[in-house]
Amino acid sequence: MSFSQPPLPFAMDAMKPFLSEEQLTFHYGKHHAAYFKNLNGLVEGKPEASLSLREVVVGAAPGPIFNNAAQAWNHSFYWDCISPDGGGEPKGELAAAIDRDFGSLAAMRKEMSDAAVKLFGSGWAWLAADKQGKLEIMSLGNADTPLKHGKEPVLTIDVWEHAYYVDYRNDRAKYVEGFWDVVNWDFAAKCYAAATK
Image (tube, rainbow, N blue to C red; front, side):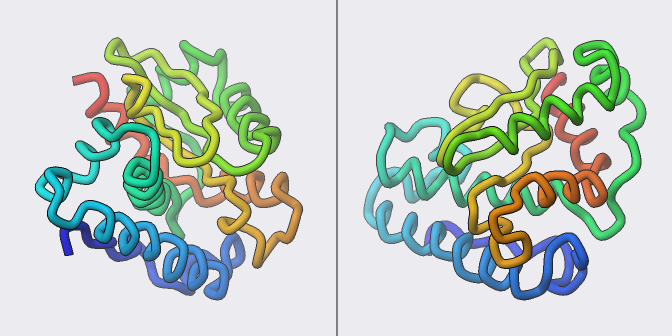
């Protein structure tokens, strides 16, 4: 197997009440795992098998390899964006950049939440940075990621229905609202620092 699904950075029952153990069992244990399984089958014996997952995502043409690689990468990133100890507010350089580029944390949260709730169909709402450190919200469908647009992901909200349907049914807005109670600002700050090096 060329690519391995990383372990969750928290226990399966650690994200309650935001996400139930049942929700995570399906999302991580079935959907995320399937992207890795499918990707390994697709790249077996091909040059992509020797690349990093990120390299496959950036270099792949549209199609099954990109879809599965990007979904594998996106989900691994998403798990780090939430934490049982999350919530609160960002600090340091990321907080300053949010104030500079959005006017306030509240304005950024509203823009990202709106992007997540209003995205038609399946996809992701991203907070991303360019090489100069300027932040923007990107609303991207299906498996798309800022990596394909020359931007660095800083934070994401997964709004595929499988991310929330067990717990929230069709109430995507409630799920998105709950995200901010568990958001991992420490991880986002590390991603922003890496993006601006």
